[in-house]
Length: 295
Image (cartoon, rainbow, N blue to C red):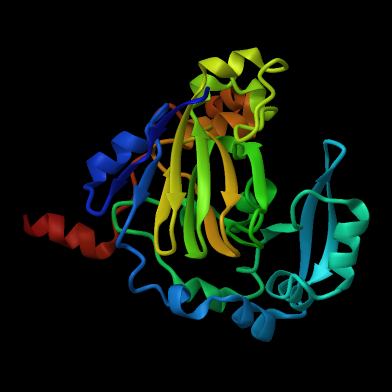
């Protein structure tokens, strides 16, 4: 029997309270009430993406014989597949031919570089610090992520199998349409979840006996709610309905050191050694120099 505890749900938190949840090893947190003014909640449905972005190419994933695979489809065709499950589309025929246990899932749609207008439809709560905007473009492109931000689309019963996000980033997911059941595990449970090999919904207890030691933090993420995960937390997510989710990874003062160590690895000490031991004084502008003289 899997040990479970509910994820804390808050509406108001201070910066300090939020950071106490996110500082490693931390614990997950669901936030309510901060998406009420998001245009995404009223605009983003499957028809919106089909009409406005129907020609976008999506990579949709599926698992067969334990191997995760993907194929490319147009947004308009994928939306039809999700919203008309009884129709005999090419995707539906392929799903039946492969005898898939669950629908194809779009988990790699990153639209914000090509469609920056979508960024106007949501904002982070004020207690969340996001440093991506401070990185220059070449650094972000060379390391992670090349184009930040995802929109996940899928039908009922799609699954994001147990995994953790890379580079020790913080993660947030905001539910736009439908509900998701989330199973979350601390990095301290990495051995017990066999580094993501376990299916926490239907575990093979004989194959993974250490899983009995794991503790799942669970929640149902409803439309309008945001889930925040500290770095390196394992998450397994099951769609209870047809779903649309927006998700980002974060780097800030909480995890920037972890992030740099991941990016540069063994090169980090050498790179830090190149920094001057004492920074030279900044030259004063004429205005600043004049103000000092007045003092």
